[in-house]
Image 1 (spheres, rainbow, N blue to C red):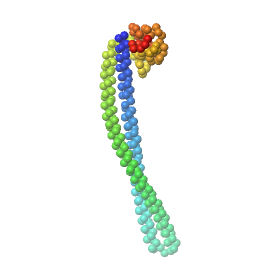
Image 2: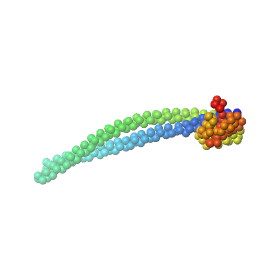
Image 3: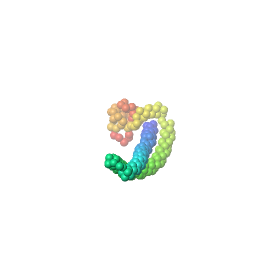
Image 4: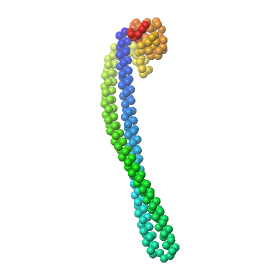
Length: 237
């Protein structure tokens, strides 16, 4: 039956169209994944740079306080030379010791903060390197994606044109039946008989109907799933 041959060709085109359209729909997700990864690293970089900036501010403030404490300590030491009582002398020594401890604590904080700035600086350089690599990968991927999308667009356009030409050769009622079945499934609307069963849902097909399908005089559908059935010449009776 010539019409069955047309339906099979039409179905093959539709399956190819479905594959290309599915690929086209999936491709942007790959780019989105790279964009998301790039965004995460960029956010990490901004966070590290902000932390480094805060550390440097804290170090400058601590250094300023240390210098101020040094001035106070020097002032107290000079006052030791002018005090007239043991009580005043003892009080100044206590102040000098207190200032010394505070200054030492600040200096220890500065050392720790400087170590943190070195670590943060290394991490920032690593993040910048990773961002540079991701940026290059993103650019390359976008180029590949654009090329593939153009290729897919061309393939789809060619097949849609072929489909249009082919569908004109199929009788309208048969075409409507085929398209109704195809629209309700993501797989095939036209399936072959296999050992007396539907090739789609595997439901048993009565022998009388098998014989009618084999003759190929008209369109027959499966009573189980509604697919259009055809007989392959190379299978056993």
